[in-house]
Length: 177
Image 1 (cartoon, rainbow, N blue to C red):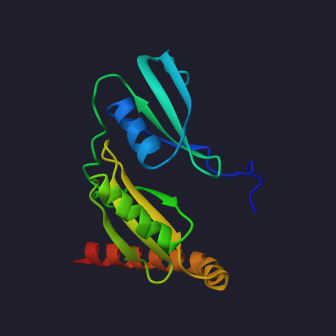
Image 2 (cartoon, one colour):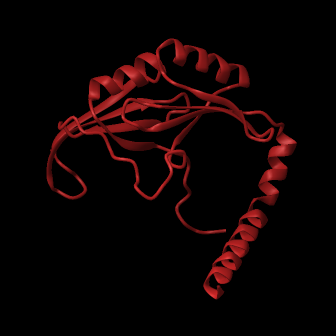
């Protein structure tokens, strides 16, 4: 075990948004995450650089937040040029598979294009969609029991180690050819 400061949970994850009000409507009015804090400033506290912004915090039921920076220039973040669009996403947990299916109906009724539901091998049931800023979101519910979750946890390190070995073997084979 590490003696690093104990990490207790997620406080917030932050993205850039094109427009604060458009983002507020999506997260607060559609997804039901209340806007709980707004920071307005002209200088970035961590760097001191001049960049007028508003920082919006939308709170989830567990007290963590998804947050956005509107830099005032009506520009959204560009996708990463070396990463498929499906890779970088924010997965938000809901209570049940029924809640996932209900969310799909509500999102589609609001004109949002939704992919899924997707069954992830009896582990999760998920839907996928984009917010107005191009952030890919996943709403997901765990569909397995506590015993299966414990089995996944027990196997996680070995599975990661196996992937690392296989990746190194592929790289070595590629170098040799």
